[in-house]
Figure 1 (cartoon, one colour):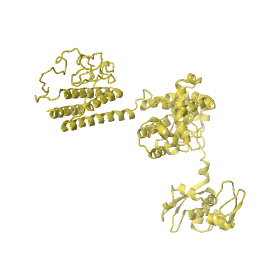
Figure 2 (cartoon, rainbow, N blue to C red):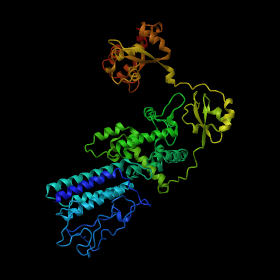
Figure 3 (spheres, rainbow, N blue to C red):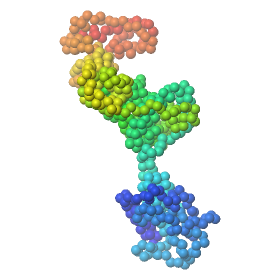
Figure 4 (cartoon, rainbow, N blue to C red):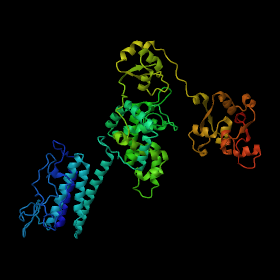
Length: 595
């Protein structure tokens, strides 16, 4: 009989779980669950089979609590931990059995139930499952988890001897565990942007960065804080709309000091410091006229997309920020080396990350501590007087200097530069472009637009002016070194121009792009097709090279498209050791390119 009773209850619980996915449980007018239903209320501990509670203070009787409004059909609204008072006559309180009383199942089968406490346990589990679902639908994940924990604790109470009951209790445990895991996963990955999900940790590393901002970097911090006034409102608005923590709007202070034209040694550009490849991946285009990594609105959207992807990958914001700094591949590599699988949060890893990254996250946390309570840290940070510039957009179709436009409008060139920071040379593109100008100046621009002289296109970068690309089809017996010699380029630049990581990728019939110097393009092509040209023949066969500190034979050989052994042979060197100031003879690559 107990096994049959447990089977019926299990089917009922599964039916409730299925219904919970389709039925929307409404909230009460205040959007809260009444105090009678709080899952964190201390649970009264049962005595063995007497339905009463321990302790001196009696608990309220079941059914006497106030039922929350609109928590769904069938929801009792009763705190399952509540028990009848000790002075209640046996048999009169709900679910209590008087001595000698015969109890029948309340279901339709009419069979006798052999264990009253199992009935009570199942009822408590059902109530707790309903309560957890109500909390979850209201967004209160903490109390939903507490309700499920209580339900799970009831199942772990007493051991059963009946194998059928044991199996059914195991099924219930699995069901509750899945719901706990589901809520916990949703709690970690969901971000509502209304409250901080970035833990404001204070430790020795964070304190060290705070001291740095208070002393040697104080001027940098204050200037960056002042510049933030131009950009924070739009950044916070976009973060809020994306549903991720608004505190991330302070990340550019650590990245660039809120300087939109900041360029790092690694070629990272803009307030959010995107490198070109990551910028392209997240929709930031660049060409001769513009680089959208410096566009505040577009780069913020790209940063939001990148940070969201990283948070989805790592599950917490601090590790996501570390990956934002040094790349997700580097962080994943560190995680994969961990001996214990669950040591994958930032503070488990940061000692093994690059030094810059190990400081990066504490610097960001130090920034949050200071901006939230500057007086506590002896910083005088008034409300920034810098405010966003109100603007409107006008259409342009030709190249014009911002200086000329500003002169016609009677405004400062710096104003137009701040409104259009993505213009690399402060020249509008020779195609349709939305130019931002101060609010209310649209009509004035329309009157003077024809009077603004057209500008020449900006000159291409120097490296593009100095080199041209020729194509070469790989023949049988060719190698990277021989092709490099033939065209007078280094093996490294040849492989980089063709995306080759090793010489094994060089195959017969493959068409290579050869970056040659523009003035030698004709010579290189002619030498590759017809043999030695007159210009190449005029070049000396040998060149002299003075060894610099740190030079090696391998580096010099790569520079001149030759091999270390050949340099040793020409210079009669007995070893590979070089000394600073030593003069070596090396074969002229241009001479070799001719024949």
